[in-house]
Amino acid sequence: MIDRSGEPILVALSGGVDSAVSAALLKAQGYDVSGVYVRTWEHEEDLLGECPGARDLKDARSVAKAIDIPFSVVNFIDFYQNEVVMPMVSGYERGITPNPDILCNRAMKFGALLDYAKEHGFSALATGHYCKRKKSSGNPAELWEGEDKNKDQSYFLARITNEQLEKARFPLGEIEKPKVREIARELDLPVAEKKDSQGICFLGKVKIGDFLSNFLEDNPGEILTTDGRVVGEHKGLHRYTLGQRRGIGVPSNTDNENYVVTGKVESKNQLVVAFESRNEATLWGTHYEIESLSFLTNDPPLEPVRILGKARYRDPSVSLLFRPLGGNRAEIVFDEPQRALTPGQVLALYYGERLIGGGTYCLSSMGRADQGLNKEVSA
Image 1 (tube, rainbow, N blue to C red):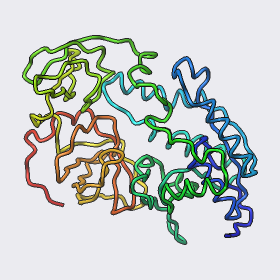
Image 2 (cartoon, one colour; image 1 turned 180 degrees about the vertical axis):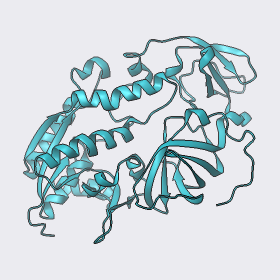
Image 3 (tube, rainbow, N blue to C red; image 1 turned 90 degrees about the vertical axis):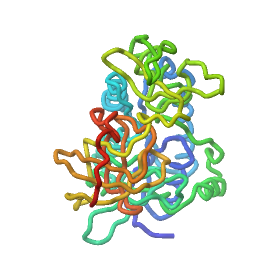
Image 4 (cartoon, one colour; image 1 turned 30 degrees about the vertical axis):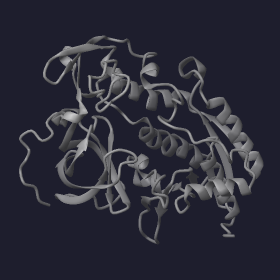
C-alpha cells in the first residue's frame, strides 16, 4: 500500500463501476477520499423518459457506503443547462454537431466541480476516465492515452486546460477494463456487474432527435440526392448529421443500399443524401480547418508539422499535417481521406500517445474538402 498521508481527494462518483473502483483504489493508496455525485437534471423524466439518473444517485451513495467514504450531492442543474445542454441545442440549431461530453469535461467536471473541490479543501479531483496523467518534478502535467486502448478516453479530455490537468487524477490509467471489473467483484462493490453507459453523457436511451424536439421546432423540407432528385421529406435539419445512415426516412434502392447524409443546404432547408457505395466525394475529405484550438502543452506547434490526430472518439490515431493559421485556428491535411467529419465535432491532437490538445471542425471548411486543394504539402 502507498501511504499518501491523508491527502484529501474528491472523487466524482457517477454510479458506475469505473468511478467506484477509482475511489476504492485511491483509498487503498492512503488518500483521504470523499465521493460526490453531481445532479444535472430536475424532473429529468419529462425530457429523458427512462433516465438512469435516480438509479445512478442511489448506486453512487451505495458505493460510498461500501468503501466507507464521506458522500455528498451537489446541485449543478442550472450550470449544466446553461453551459452544456443549451450550447449543444444551439449548435444543432446552427447546423453543427457538438460533443457535449467534451464540453462537460472542460466546463463542469474539471471546471465547476473542480472549483467546488478546491473551495472545500481538496487537493485534486479524480474521475474514472481511462487515461494517464504523467507528472515529473518541475514540469507541467501531461495527459497520455490509457493502457486499455479499447477504452482509452483521452479524446474526451482534448479541451481541458493545463491548470485543470494539474488538479486532475485518473486512477484507471494503467488498468484494463476487465481488471477493473475484477477489482469491483473482489471488493464486493454494489455496481460490479452494472453495465456501462452508452452514447451522449446525459441522454441514456433517448434519441438525440427526440431530445432536441423539446427545444427546437421541426421544419420539414426536401431530401434530395447529390444529382438533384427529390427522394423524400426530412423532419428538420437539426435531426440529421453528416454520415448518418439510419433514420433518414428514405427507402433503399433495388440493390438494398441505404442512403447516407452527405450534406445540408441551410439556405433552402434541404438535406442531401447519396448511396455510400458510390464513393460520394462530399462524404470524404482530407483538408479541413479547425477552430477554438486549445493545448495541453507549453510548446504547441507554431510551424507546420506532422503529428497524429483522432478524428473522432474510437477512431485510431492517424497521421496529418498541422498548419497553424493564427487566432486559434489551423489547417489540417490528413494523409488518408476521412469519412463524414462534421462541423462542431472535435479533433484531438497527439504527439505519439500524448494528448496535446484539440479543436473543433469549422462549419466554413466543410464542403471544401479536396476541392482545389490537391496541392503538395510538406511539413
